[in-house]
Amino acid sequence: MHKADVFNDGREDSETESRHYELRPLRRHVAFQMKTRLDGSRLKTDQEPSDDVLFTQCAKMIWKWILAKYGVLFHSMPQEVQTFHADLLAYHVAVKYHPEKRLMNVHVRHMDPEVGGRIWFSEASVYEQHDPDEGTPGMWMKVLNGYAQPEREDSATVERQSTYFSYPGFYKNIVDNIGVFSALPCSGRRRIVREEEAPAIARAISDKERQFPIVLIISRDDGSGMMDENWLMQFRVSDFTRTVWRYAHVVCCYEPVGRKILELVGDVRFSSEPQVPRFYIYWPDGTQDDYGGDDVRNCSFGRHLEARGDARTYDIVHGGQAFYHRIVTDLRDWNVNANMWEGFQLDIMTDIPD
Image 1 (tube, rainbow, N blue to C red):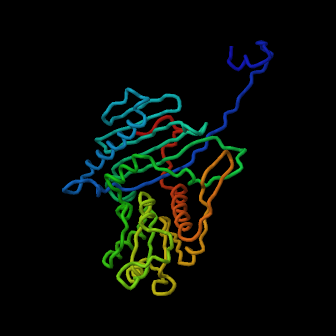
Image 2 (cartoon, rainbow, N blue to C red):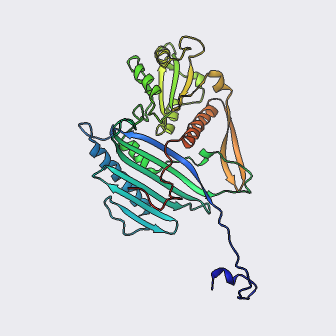
């Protein structure tokens, strides 16, 4: 007897049509993506770390994160990183580990504990780049974090893709403790560019491998040797940097250095007004946004406070506080919509590649 045959009026004869249940397809949504080089700038070593050290340390951090997150379910998981595969309902771990090739591919998946039908996944590839045509030789890492869920036809709101922006914990650990490089070293500290560093910033802006947006903030001297950032109002550069530094570079400079950078990148406005003070964003695709004091002062933004079903409540903020939220949102929107890496597409593949 087919299971569907019992859902009728009690008869189990051949004349009763079996009911068919249509499964609604899941749609993948990107919550974070990145493709970047590992540079080892945060490793505590006396000498420049080798590719073998970078790969080994990165693999250990990813494995430690997987073990902490999924080890309670999969008791057979070994303590040391190795090739591993396990499934339990919607929970999935697949790791292909080839230390002799300096290659590690990872896919993990779990259910959202609060939203029915939503499945979260994280994918990563750590690999050694050999072909200069594909990128600078060395150790690279690609990361994709996201979720899949049925499309909600009855939703009263359309959420932007970056609503659930999040990167997996292993990416944070690698950035914080190993170090990554995307045209510039990744840094969570406020950076004030000196004159001799202007060419390096200009080269980074033009670097075709760069996947981090570069935020360049040019301000004037306040007359006492300090940077006058009153034009940014409540926008605090240090707080902003700590928020976005794992997916965007933030650099500050005084007017002479800023104009020099503009000149080096070919901005014909480098000597004109009102280019200072000004807030520039150089996107990896070669486009640029820039904002002045009036843009900051007149900015308004609706911060999402809570959600109850399809009802959304917002707190409207203005000025520098609004500008802060707008730029953070723009950076995250760019990240989730960029075409860095599509991942392993395990919704249509049966296994991750070696």
